[in-house]
Structures are given as structure tokens and as C-alpha cells.
Image (cartoon, rainbow, N blue to C red; front, side, top):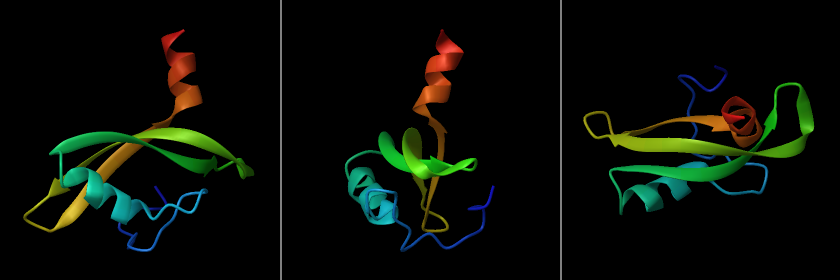
Length: 79
């Protein structure tokens, strides 16, 4: 929720990847895509956790929209 409505142009994941640039590269080849990023969790600001994200462009506003979930959470849900 802390990223809703925020300018993410220069935001980088924990490995230093500029997410907006990466998303645009991926979306130049796909209308909708999945990718993996590395983030900390709200209760653990030190460690990185892989997160799967789904992204797409909303052309009328010229924005990228995405949503994601931590992979450890997904694994727990499917067990």
C-alpha cells in the first residue's frame, strides 16, 4: 500500500535493479508479463525475498501497473 500513487521512476529493488526500466524492457515484447524482483518484507528490512510480479501497461495514462506476491507466501498457499 505504501507504493500506491507514488512515483516509482527511480525505484530499485534490493539488488539495485531499476524496476521501471526493467518493466518497460519486458513490456516492449509482451502485453502482460511476469517477472521476479527482490524485496524486503515489512517486518524484515534486512533480508531480501524473491517476489513474483505481474505487469502490464495502461496506455491511456502512459503507466505501468503491477501486482506481486512473495514466493514463500505462494509456496505456503499451494502446500
